[in-house]
Image 1 (cartoon, rainbow, N blue to C red):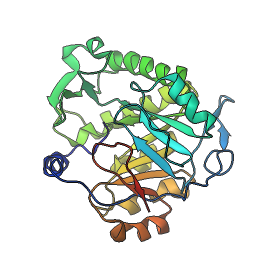
Image 2: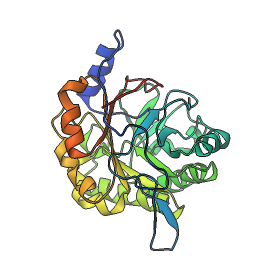
Image 3: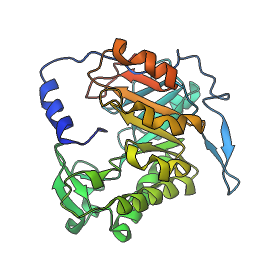
Length: 280
């Protein structure tokens, strides 16, 4: 499951376990045209076409189990392992674009390829059950694994990838990661996606937006309203790239007007990232 991995966020997880959340995220009204602004295709340098989501596109983010296709929105972000090529094809038949969620910054003991990660690249636990930070400096080890994962996304027919946990350098990972280590890793991740004709989103990592904007096709953000950070995502909007934004505890009345002004694709989700959504 995707998340903002900070101590405050882990504390929030515990607090939310006993109660339902209220809030919402911004987006369009679900009438976006897949072949128009949100679904237009731009050529890459290699002459291939990549989907480029545009500012304001409405979306659904469901990482809890197999996708439920009931949300009337043009973009779905779903777990790459838990959904099949048939699930992706069904969404495509409905005119949807589909993003493949993959955790690239932490090891998950419940994934089918968990045994391919050597113990030497496994760091501290990150606060989520069964997960440990990865030593992103070890590109010799991690790149082939991530290439196989992105091959899976491509082969299942996904249009894009959401690589999660790409800001380990700001957390207690058990490794002396630097901002330069993170930039190098994130650029490699973007390259792996682009080599497969997939667009790729920058997940959180706001401080490095200036250095990474040209490498990523859209952004995915958690809780920029709660932390008063949403304006930092403006470079993506100005570049014509969507910012897919979620809040978990903020009420819509506190941030939706600003989200609309900034042209963010905002909604409120519950922390488990199931079907429930409340768009701005």
